Length: 455
View (cartoon, rainbow, N blue to C red):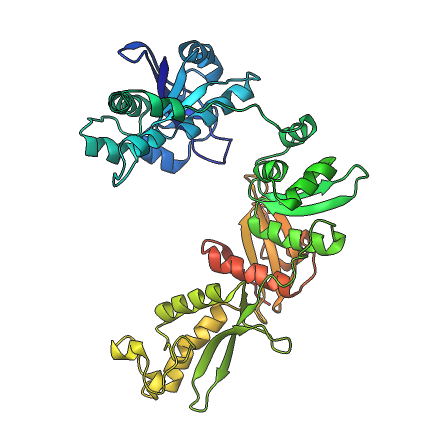
């Protein structure tokens, strides 16, 4: 007996999603013998992109039953059945999460029509439900709604059953949930942790910190530590007695705090104390013709780089983006070695600085813009990012090119007021690590709010 199902969710953080709609068709291999279709009030916010995708909004769900009101029906219709879904791992995880919130252990065998299709219908261009059913001539209506997708999955499953006449492939593809091998003390620790961004501290039985890390999902990261088989994880599993944490909301704040805490506490399992995290730097010099040249090269002890990179490849990728964005010369940025003009000049994308055709001042203005964009040397500014709570923001303070510290502020605060700002900041050490963390984060996060401070 099979329970073919599809679930629509609110979206959001891993294991914090809620169900908004569910459709289940009980199928005995010949015909549908039972069905259950319902909207579900998830009692949490629906992500905007999900509303656009499914058309399901909070207003539609206001009077819908909550999950605990439909849970019994779901248990009954799936009893003694194999759960069948397109990307079954996702749907099964969502169901288990909802039942776990009710304190009920939901356990079923499962079968994924994506995996099954790859074995029985190889070499398809795509195995997404929409494209796969379209290629096979299976009609599908109400795409991205539970009932429409569940019916399409049912029709696909019937086709797959007919192709596997001896039922050997289907039998070998059925997944049986294995009993957790996680020790009870480790499970208890995980249950107390939040699925939020922050810094975590792993302690031994004497309360000593043995490892410090940061994550955008503390619970998920600690679970990985407790289940991975690598050397470091095994040492953690043997020594851990408790885990404490500090929410930061912002990944940038978590990275800065993690770096400082590791240097301060020097935990025994943090072998790489966040030093030598970067090997390449961006440097500039003016050549004999007066043009500003930019180069990615090995970090030099006696020279301060404009910005830093973890490895040469990331530095070269950065330089290629700058060449495109600011119309720079590949020869003057070290991307091309040439005695004459660069390749871009030949295709009329370089203004000729490589052969002294472009005005020095004009080219240097664009090259200096790259330097100014990627350096906070001598600048006074604050970086505003997510806070720990909805009505809060985090702030990173930089004064005269020096990182001063981090803080959190209420949305009602006048954050550009220097006196208020200084009272919110927790001082932290400024070093090459913090410079690298801040600059690389600024490069990766274009939506980060940067506010220049006035004197």
